[in-house]
Length: 566
Image 1 (cartoon, one colour):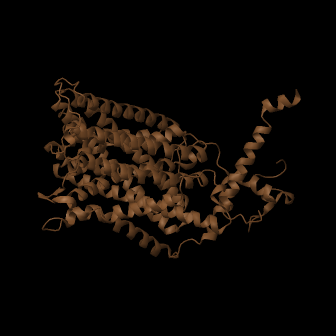
Image 2: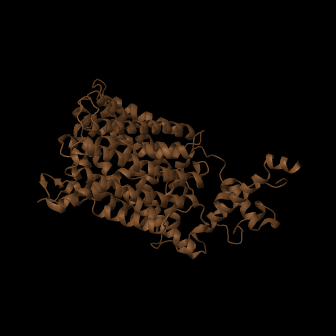
Image 3: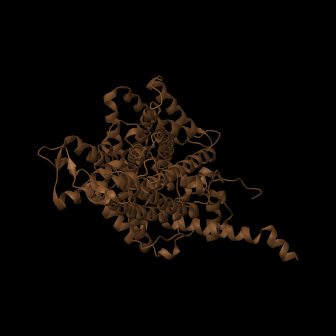
C-alpha cells in the first residue's frame, strides 16, 4: 500500500498468534498493518496472507514420500528381517507384520488429518505443543531428534561393515569419515536437490526390493539353478514356539509369544511413518501433498514389508541357523541364505550393494528429519534460536550440523565390542518411535476435543481421514500395549535379563525425565491446554484466507479475463 510502511514479516508472524476473535491485534498499532477501515475479518485474512512465508515450497509430494521411504527401508529390512521368521514361523511373522501394518496405517491417517489443518515444520511435535502441553511437545521433540540422530551413527557403522564385504584394505576410520561427510554434505545442499537425491535413492531402493521379491518367487517356483520347487514346503510349521537364551516355551503360549515378538519387531520396522509431515511449510501445497504422501507411504511400506515377509516364509526355513547370524554383512541376509541354498552364489554382492545404498540413504534421511525437529523446537523457544540460521539455499545449517554431530558415535565401532553397543542404541531409538506414535495420537484426540469446544466439526477440516476418532484410539491403545510388553523377554527364563530390559524400557524413562525436567526448568503448568484455548481459530482463518486467495487468482487469471472480454 503506497504511502505507508510495510511491517516486517517476522513482526507480523509474532503478532499473528495473538489475533483476537474480532480481527484486531491487541497491544499493537493497527495502522502499521492497514487503515482503520480494514480492521474487519477481511483485513484479518489479508494480514494472515501477508504473514504467510514466501513461497519456499521446495519439496513436492513425491519428494517427501521418498524421504519417508528412504528412512524406513533401511538395513533392518535386509539384514535382520529373518529374525522375525525365526521367532514366529512363516505365518506367525506374517500375522505380526499385518497387524502392526494396520496400526501404522491408522497412525499415518491420524497424522495426515492434523497436518492438513496445521502444516508446520516439525509436524506432530508442534501439534503436541499447541494441542496438548508445551512441555510435552518439547520433550517429544528432543526425544525424537535424539532418536533419529542416533540412527545416523548406526547406519554409518552398517555402511562401513557392508563396504568391508568387498575389501578390508581400507581402514574403518576412513570409511566412517567418508560416509559421515557424505551424509552431512547431502543435507547442506538446497532442499529441492536433496529431495531429488532421496527420490532417486527411493526409486532405486524400491526397484531393488521388488527385484528381490521376484528372485524369491523364481526360487520358490523351481526356476533357480537347482530347479527345486519349494512351494509352501516351509509352511508345514506355520507358527514357531519362541526360544530365548536356549529355553523354548512350548505349546500355545510359546507360539503366542512368538507372534508377539514379531509384532514388536514390526513396530520398530514401521516406526517414523509420520516423518512425511516433519518438513511442514517446506513442502509445496502442504494441506494436500502431506496427507496424500502419508497415505501413499503407509500403503507402499505395508506392501513392501508384508511382501518380503511372505516371500521369506516361502524360500527360507524358519529353523535355518543363519537367520540369527551376527556377522553384520550381507551373509546374514535371509535373501542371501535363500540364494545360496538355490545355487545363486553371485547374488550376495548384489544384495550387499543394495543394503549399502539403503544404509546411506537412511542415514541421510535421519539427519534431515532430526534437523527439522530441532528447528521446530527453536521456533517454539524450546531450543536455541541459533538452530534456525540458514545458508543461502534456505537450509538450516546449524540444525543440520547439530543433528549430524551424533554421527561421531560411529567411531566407537572401531573397537570390535562397541558395534553391539551401537545396535543397542538403535533399539532405544526404535522404542522412541512408538512413544512418538502415542503422543501423536493423544495430540489428535485433543484437537478433536478443541473442535467440539470451539463449535467446529470434522466436516470443516481440509482433509478427513476414515473412521476417526476411533482410528486414533485404536492406534493409541495398540502402541501402548506394544510398549508395555516390548521387553517381555527379560522376564523369561530362570534369570532376569537386565540387558534386554534396559534396551526396551530405558527410552521410556528417558522421555519421562525430559518431560518432568522441562516442566521443572520452565515452571509451566502440569495441566493440558484447555479445549477452548487450543489455537484452532487461527488455523481456520489461515485456511479461509488461502481459499479466498485461490478464488481471487482464478477470477483474475488471464484465460478467464480474455473469455470475459470476448
